[in-house]
Length: 209
Image (cartoon, rainbow, N blue to C red; front, side, top):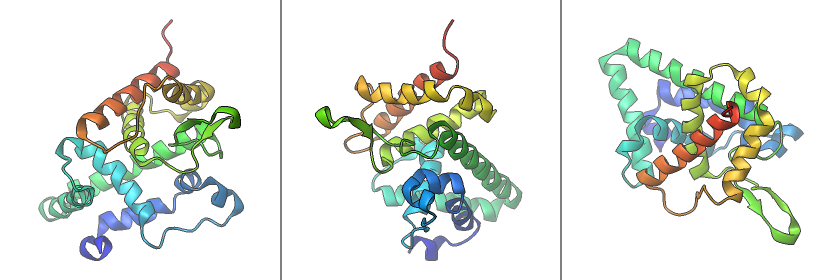
């Protein structure tokens, strides 16, 4: 329904980004490694990308239901296209560049393993591991934090050099129970999560002397 109602440059952008190798590897690393990954027929992959943009750009405007919040992002760009085509195109380009950067560096940090945008789970005698699938609340907050970090550290090499420190920083947030991604999402929770993640990652990239 969303595709039919809002089809245009923004939906086309989501389609392009859903085909991005780094995103596909992050979303389903097992299928990607096997060469069996397929875009979602129900557009859940596009919605995940739309969530990232909506929360990062407009989190202060969040109101339930989530579906309406995401649709307002699309409505904003529809109106922008009518008012100022040049600004619209520049904004779409900026979103694409931002997204490609975030998924590229985070895939580089985690490799082709299963950890990117997942919760670290302590399983007692069974050991510990990253969750099997992307946690949506973590995805929202971490994407926003990484987008903000890009403003200070725009070179992907910085992230690769601090690969282990960055992975450990995320893991430690869950081990210490500093980061809670459970429960119903709210604006205060999103802000808290994003701030905690941003601070931890920034210290991992550039530890105090």
